[in-house]
Amino acid sequence: MNNNMTPTATDVTLVPITPSRLTRLRQSDLWYSFSSHPSAIIAATLLALVALTAFLAPVITPQNPYDLSALELWNAEIPPIWNSEGQMPYLLGTDTQGRDILSAILYGSRISLIIGFASVVLALSVGLSLGLIAGYFGGWIDNVIMRVGDVLLSMPFILIAILITAIASASLPTALKDVLAAPILIVAIAVPSWVQYARTVRASAMVEAKKEYVQAARLIRVKSWRIMLHHILPNCMTPIMVAATLNFGLAILSEATLSFLGVGMPSDQPSLGTLIRIGNQYLFSGLWWIVVFPSIQLCLIVLSVNMIGDWLRDALNPKLR
Image 1 (cartoon, rainbow, N blue to C red):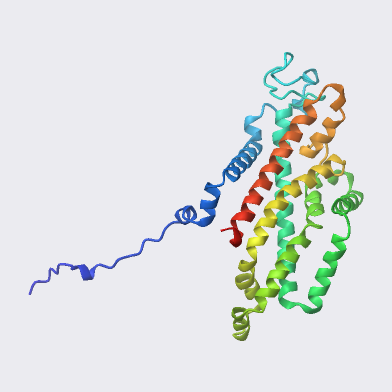
Image 2 (cartoon, one colour):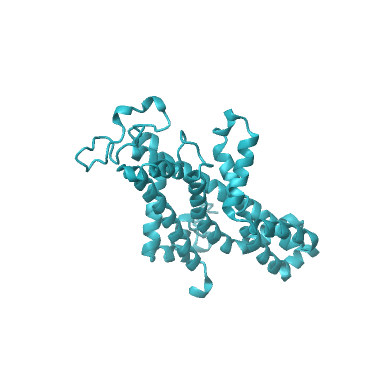
C-alpha cells in the first residue's frame, strides 16, 4: 500500500484574504469623497502642517519663548526678515521683549490646539453620556438634563466661560493660577458646549430606543448600558462627528477670545489669543507684525477646521450621495 498520498484540488482549503484597514479605508466612500474634494485636501494638509510644526516647535524654532533667560532685550522690535532692518534667525521679527514671533506662534499654536481638542473631547464625553441617558430612559431624568441644558443655553457662551475662569482664579492660590490655567480654560469652554451634543444624541436615541432591535435586546435582558453603547450610540455618531469637527474650530476661537480678554493663558505661556492681545497694544505704533502674524495663524487654523467640517457634513449626508 502506497502511503504517499498526493493532495488533490479538493484537499486544498482556500483561506479568504481579509483586506487590511488601510485597504478598506482607501476603498470606502468617505475616502473617495475626500480624494475628490480639493478644498478638503488643502484644508487637511494645512491643518496637518500647522499641527506638525506646532508640536515640533522645540526642534525647529530658534528659541523657547517660555524661557525668559533666552530672551535678549537688545533684539527687541526687529521687523520681519524681508525688511531692510530684519535679522536672521528672526524670520517674522521679534516683539518688545526680544521674543521671536515665529517661535511664539508655533508654541502658541500648540497650546491653542491642545486646549481646543481637549475641551471638545470633554464636552463630547459629557454630552454623549447625558444625551444617551436622557433619550433612552426619558421621563424625569430627561426633563432634568434638558432643563439644565436650557439654562446654560439661555446664557451667553462667553459669559459662562468668563464666570468659570473668574471663580477658579479667585478660589485658587496665586501659585496655582498659572499652572492650572490650561485645565481651567478647558473646563470653561466645555461646560457650555456639551448641551449641543446632548441634544443631538438625545433626539437620535429617542428614535432608536423605539426600534425593534432595541426592544428585542430589552426582552432578553441585555443591560441598559450595553444597549446604549453597542446598539444606540453607533447610530448616533454621524451628526456627532460633524458637530465635533465644527466645534473644534469654535473651541480654538473661544480660547483665543478668553485669552484676548485677559482671562485665559498668562503672558508667560502665550497662546495665540494671548499673543494677539499683547500685539494689539502695539498695532498703531508701527510694530504691526506682533499682532498680524498670530492673527493669520489663528485664521488659518479655524478656516481649515471649518472647511474639513463642511466637507464631512456633505460626505456623511445620505441625501447628497
